Image 1 (tube, rainbow, N blue to C red):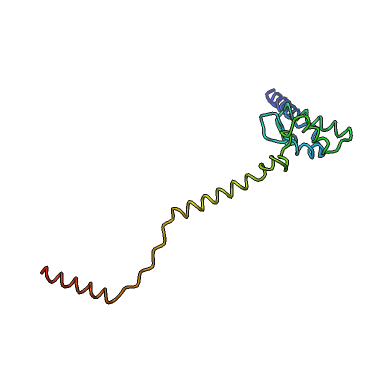
Image 2 (image 1 turned 30 degrees about the horizontal axis):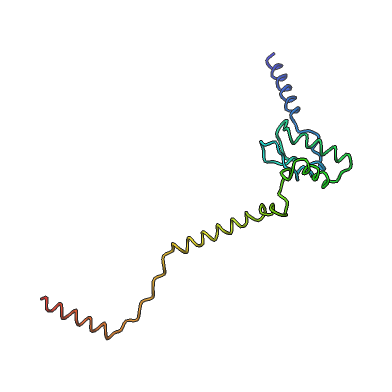
Length: 157
């Protein structure tokens, strides 16, 4: 009897897991368009194609809309333009490469360059200066000072 209960429980759990699998709406054509659109549910930072939230209030209807528009014969760019018209530029997964949005592409590289320049400046500023080369010694002056020191030491004795 306990063995029968465990088997029934296993079948029930397997059925529940099967019911939670992803929908059939994620065909390669939908994925191709969905990869270019951001999921705007507010809980994730994924695209419409990669959002894995069960019952996501944005990506599931967006996938259905993409499938409907593709069935109507619209091209991928026309579908993306339709989403941008409805949601604005925030519907795009990556910022466009024009106008003010170009800063989104340029600034990471500028920030890295500025950071490396600041590190280089900091190292150069706080680096110890190189030791100066020893000056040439005038032997005549050296012998004169040596003689003076010997005279002073003789007076002390």
